[in-house]
Length: 88
Image 1 (cartoon, rainbow, N blue to C red):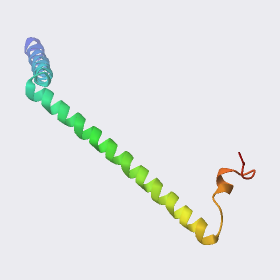
Image 2: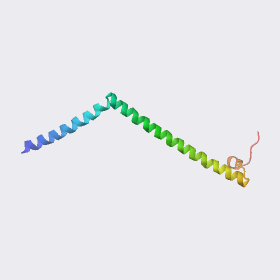
Image 3: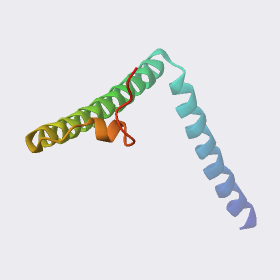
Image 4: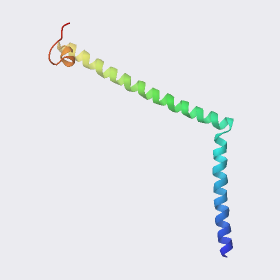
């Protein structure tokens, strides 16, 4: 009975090891490398797209602030130079 238990445990561990090795070996095949490169490119494109969207949102927000300041007749130099305009 004890031998059957250890045989079962050994077979289970062996199957897990073979499965893990096969999965790692798949990563080094041409198809695995292509899939990895494709996933990296998709991730990079998503990151760049997110960055561009954040920049556009910031630009739109700043543009709205500028329009509001001009509508009120305020100058933006006060934001840039709180102590007063510096002349050269």
